Image (cartoon, rainbow, N blue to C red):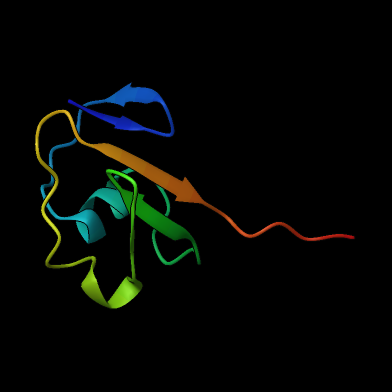
Length: 64
């Protein structure tokens, strides 16, 4: 189990890139932080999610 935006989730995939697909984000442009540290898109495939980690997913907002 991990925390995704403060909600407990069970993730089958262990890389951040695969987890985003599993969570329904696919190719959506989002910013990600793992345990409080920004993870660039280029590093998501190699970043492994561990039990109990905290993942923050932020989507850009439009409007003004």
